[in-house]
Amino acid sequence: MKKAVIILVIAAMAIGGTITTSCKKKTKDPSYPQLVGAWKGRTSQNIPIEVDVANVDGDLYVTYVNLRFSAAAGDTASVTRYSSSGLYNMSGTSFYIFLDGTSPNVTTIAGVYHLDTLKLVGNFVGYSGNPPVATNGTYTATKSAK
Image 1 (spheres, rainbow, N blue to C red):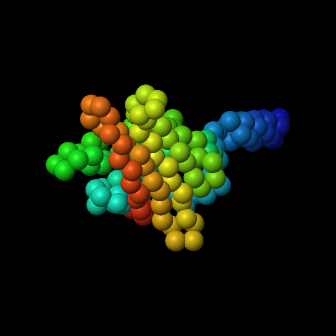
Image 2 (cartoon, rainbow, N blue to C red; image 1 turned 135 degrees about the horizontal axis):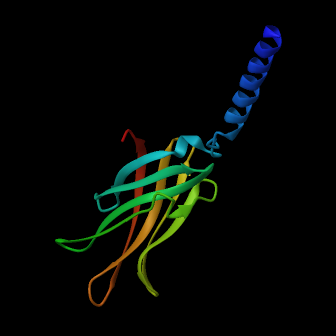
Image 3 (cartoon, rainbow, N blue to C red; image 1 turned 45 degrees about the vertical axis):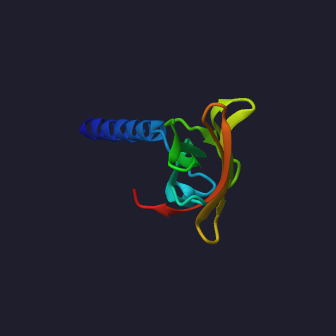
């Protein structure tokens, strides 16, 4: 009888452990895990830029963008966007985001991550002023410790 109780207790623990283990939520690995993190660099106007990438349920998302640009001497415009669930679901290693404004004066940023050099290279079009003036620029960023 004592032996049967011990076997039942062990069986119950084994079943309970299996159920508990299988119910844990697991985070999927994205296609390019090396892209997850903060990417910081400079624009063609020598102004800092930051783009953050996160793993959201196995998909890569741009979650943060801080873009500043100079539309005229002494004038710096800034656009910052953040969403923990993602601003843009990346297509492979590239992205294109509408940041601010209304058509046709929409501030946009695009980028491509180069896996061989671990650099982010892209371009942007920023609008500021009244009437809106377009500023075109490029940028390069590298992954940094945050």
